[in-house]
Amino acid sequence: VLGLVILAVVSGLAETGTLSAAGTGLILAKAITFLVVAIGLGLRYSPVLLASVGQMKVRGSLIVSAIFFCVLLAAVAERSGLAAIVGTFAAGLILAKTERRAHIEEQIKPVADLLVPIFFVAVGMQVGPALLNPFARSSLPLGLALTSVAIGSKLLAGLGVYQRGVDRWRVGVGMIPRGEVGLSFAGVGKATGTIEEGVYAAIVAMVVTTLVAPPWLKTLYREA
Image (tube, one colour):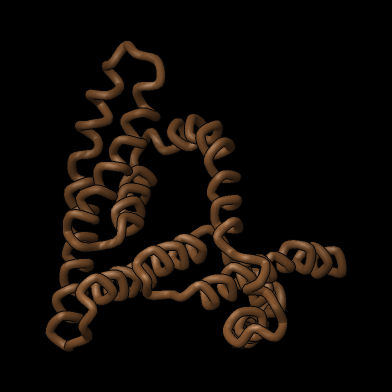
């Protein structure tokens, strides 16, 4: 949630082109207000809306309504001067609290199977091979630095767990992966001009390299 609020602030500052305490405070208040109001109203009225959808004698009415709801909140967020992902995040939280959550998850899988690969390919296609040149000033070296911080900081955080019977290394390694949310943030930053191409390439490289976590976790559990 904090990451989404920060994204909203940065996106708003990128659009205005100015940095001021008043402007930052206004965007911050707008983001928090949007999340609170959207989630509050959504949780209150979602049972009524789902009941109406359930009465429809049309195939796919539930999943179509869920997708429409996500797009609607994304559009409202953008019209409010926030990033679209803030609206979709709020929609996801609302739908996750409904009694039809399992049905929505099951029906959304084919859609995800189609669109998720396209998303990752589109992200990768925006990274020029030249940007990963080891002599490039702000791409590969920065990517290696971000990867080191992403992995090292999570391992250190895991060592801070003192609960008896908990493997601290597993906790640390489990926090390492960075996925579609990080890439979405990077995409928004690149689209708004907040993040330059070299930094964008470094972030994508960091996300890819943190995928070492799953085999690492598998090794830790095998050793246990």
